[in-house]
Amino acid sequence: MSSRNPSYTSPNPCKHLADYKLKHGLNGYNLIQNYIKTSPHGRTMIHNCKSEIPICSFCSGCKGRLYICLICSSVSCCQSLDSNHALFHAQSQDGHEIAVDMERAELYCCICCDQVYDPDFDKAVMCKHILRLPRTENGFVGYCLRSIKRKRLSFGVDLDSKNAKRLVSMRDHRSNSCFPLGLRGLNNLGNTCFMNSVLQALLHAPPLRNYFLSDHHNHETCRKRSSERLCLPCDIDVIFSAVFSGDRTPYSPAQFLYSWWQHSEDLACYEQQDAHEFFISMLDRIHEKEGKARNTIKENGDCQCIAHRVFSGMLRSDVTCMTCGFTSTTYDPCVDISLNLNMNTPSSANLANKSIKPAENNGTTTLVGCLDLFTRPEKLGSDQKFFCQNCQERQDSLKQMSVRRLPSVLCLHVKRFEHSPIKKMSRKIDWHLQFPFSLDMSPYLSSSIVRKRFGNRIFAFEGDESDISTDFEVFAVVTHSGMLESGHYVTYLRLKNQWYKCDDAWITEVDKEVVKASQSYLIYYVQKVLSHRVSEDLSCVPVSPHGDTFVPIAGCC
Image 1 (tube, rainbow, N blue to C red):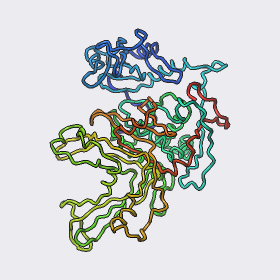
Image 2 (image 1 turned 90 degrees about the vertical axis):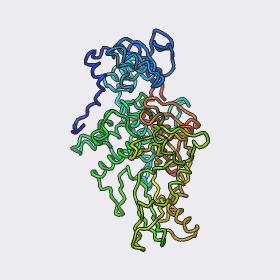
Image 3 (image 1 turned 60 degrees about the vertical axis):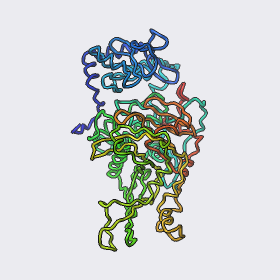
Image 4 (image 1 turned 30 degrees about the horizontal axis):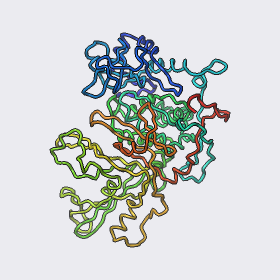
C-alpha cells in the first residue's frame, strides 16, 4: 500500500481466499445459495437442510460458531482457541480453508481464523436475498430497485444553534420491536471490528450526525469541485446516506476502509488495529480535508472543522515549583482524555502476563475515581525536574491537569493496554470500570481545580466556564473483550433510552446491566443540552428528491 491508487478497488482478499477463487471460481458461492435463508426482518443466515439444528461433524455439538465448508459442506465448530474444529478441518483437508459462518452468512477463513471479505460473495447473498423480498404490483422488488435519496436534514445543529433550521421529522409509529432509523449493522471486512465499533459511535454522535445529514459535506458536490478522487469525509457522507436510508441489511464500508488505508498507509493491513488509534486517525484525516477545503481557523486560533467543533477541548497543565511556589501553565488542545485505571500498580513480575486478571477484592474501579486520579497533583520524578523561572534552576515540582474547555462530545479513553519498552512486554488490564450514564464534569474544570488549590476562595478566574454546560449523557460505549493479541470490539449505543449492542453486522437490544458489566474502552458522552435539543420521540425518514416520503420497508418499519 505504498502508492495511492486514485480509483477505488475492493480490499485484497487473504491468500487462502484468493487461492480458492483461482481454483473454484464462484461455484461454491452459487451452491451456498441453496442454504441461504432470509427472515422477514432481513436477517440472513445459512440453513443446512440436513438437520433442523446444525451440529458440528466432529463433536456433534451446537455451541460456539458453526461454519459450513464451501468444498464439502461439512459443518465444524469453533468454541475457543483450544477447541477449534473448523481449523482442524482446514488443516486436515487440503484446500478446505474457506467456509461460511452459518449464523451471519459471512465468509470465514479457517486458517486465518477471521472473517474475510469478497464482493462476489456479497452479490451471491444479496441475489438470493432480493429474490425472497416482497414485490410490488408491477413485479419489482419494493426497495432494492429504487434509488433511495436520503433526506437532507437540518437538525438545528449549527453548533452555535443560532441559525437552527426546521427539523423535518415525524413521530415513530413503528412497533417496539423495530430498531430506530439509522441503526444498521456493519459487515466485518477482515479484522475490522475496531473500525466498525468506532463508526457506530460516530454515526450516532448528535452534532456529527446532524452535520452530515444537513448536507454540510455533500460527497456529490465535493467530488465535482475537487480533483482528488479520495476524500475521507465524502466516504463518511456515503456511510451516513446508507445508514439513514432505511435499508436494514448490513452495510459493507469497503470504500471507506480503502480510503482510510490510503490516508493512513502505516495502518493499511488486515491485522487488528487499536480502536482508539483509529478514532484519532479518522479525526486527523477529516481535519486535513476540511482545512484544505475552507478557512477553518478563527482569529483565536481555534479550528472550526467539524472534527474539532465536535470533539475538541482544551487541557490545562500547571507545574508548580515546590521551593518557591512559582507556577508555569500551559494549554493543550485535545480530542479525547486518556485515563489511567485507578488501581495499585501490579508488581513487575505480573508484567510478563499478557492479561492481568482482577483480584477478588480490588478488580473494580470507577470512572469518577479515574477522573480524580487524572486531576490529582503528581510529584514529578528526579529525571523530570522543572526549570523554575523564579529560582533560575531545576527544582522538584508538582504537576496537575485540569480541563480548561469541554467539547460538545466528550470521548474518554480508558488505558487498558500498557507497554513496557524496557522489558519489551505488553499487557491488558481486565479490571471492571463502573461509569455513570450521566456525568457532571464541573469538578474537573480548571476553575474548580484552581479554586480548590487555593482553599476554595472566591475570586475571578480567567476565562471562567460558568456559562458552559458541564452535564453530559452517555450515548456510546466501545468495549474490548478477550486477550491483548486476539480481542474483539463491540459498541453499545443508547437510543431513545434503549441500549443496543452493535457487534459488526448484528444489532440486538440489551439491558443496561449488560452495558454496565462490559469492559469499556472508549466512552462517549454528549452535552445534555445537545442531547435534548432534538426530541427523542422524533425520527428521520427518507424522502424522495421531490419531497415525498418513501413507503416504509416491509418488515423493518
